[in-house]
Image (cartoon, rainbow, N blue to C red; front, side, top):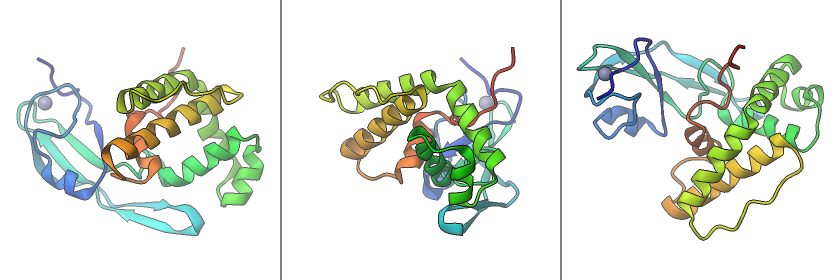
Length: 197
Ligand SMILES: [Zn+2]
C-alpha cells in the first residue's frame, strides 16, 4: 500500500465541485489515505487568452494517514505557470504548425522566452505525450482509427492529445474545455521541468 510523497503534491482537478468533494474518489499520488479539507493555498492570478486574467484560490487538502498536505489545482492552471493551459495550448499548436516562438509571443502577448521555454519542455517529452494521448484516445474510443503522423514530434504529440480530448468528449461529454482535458491526460507533465542528466 502506497503512501503520500513527502513533498506536497499538486493534484489537478477539473472543477471546483470536484475539489470541494476531496473525497476518496479523487485521484491522488499513490496513497489510500482519506483527504480532508485543509484551508486554501495562496491566490493565483493567471493570464488567459485574449488578454484576460483568471483568479484562482486553490483548496488545500491533507492526507489523514500521512498528514501531508496537497494542493488541488484547477486543470486550467499548469503548475508553477502564470498562464492558463488554454493560452499555453494556443502557443503549442502555433508552434506545431511551424510558427516561431517570437511570432507566437508577439501574437499572443507573451514574452518570446516564455513561449520558447514551453516549446522546449513539450518537445523534450513529445514522444511520451504522444504515447499518453494515443493510449487515452484508444481507451476512450476503441473504434478509433490509427492517428495519422502529423509531420514532427511536437505535432504528433499535439494530434494524439487532441484525439484523446475529442474521444473523451464523445465518451463522457464536454466535462471541461479541451486543453483542461489534455492537462489531465498528460498527468500534469505537459510543462513539467525537464529531467536533468
Ligand atoms: Zn497519504
